Image 1: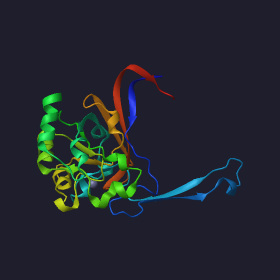
Image 2: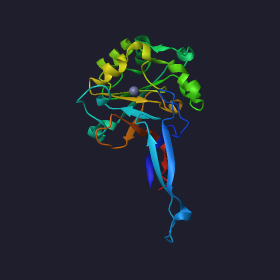
Image 3: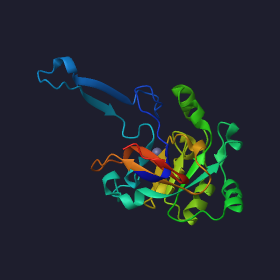
Image 4: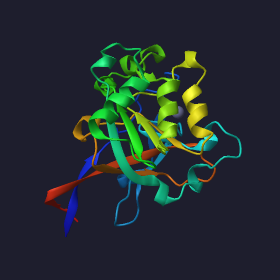
Length: 237
Ligand SMILES: [Zn+2]
């Protein structure tokens, strides 16, 4: 089958070493039954996972901060597929505590046009270069994040999802203002986004696939981008 989009995987692989907010191990995996233990002629390996809900590339549902607001299982799939805008601040974010400013958003719009409503805005800070070094990636919770002014402008644009390639759009010393502002409007946040350098600034779409767990406030996602391709790629299935 010919699939008319190029697919980009924006997801980090989860294992027990991935960087977490509090620096502790956020994921464990063990085998509960192994091939050689199976009596049946077909052999199985069965596993059990234990993890933080907000592990790896994941989303925060509104209920992460707002009591009574929608949880992961409440999010309709129509809200999880949308146009994707990538704002590259990697030059400015050479400074580790860089705060994305309203000026960054306006400079982007001057070049590429007004950010469409109901879209997903991804902030590409370049911080994912440290993903394979969990302590450096966490960096005692100092990494590029987003200013309240910039987030307010994105709210004015009616952006629905806000993603970043760091542990959080907030640093602890700002009182988690971005989480509050964003989630109280029933919007969603995406953290630890991978491979944003593979996306164009405009023209792609993203699909967010969280685990559909009742009343979950966060969930790991498989985050997939679609780029319309004149050279249709062959779907391996
Ligand atoms: Zn968060």
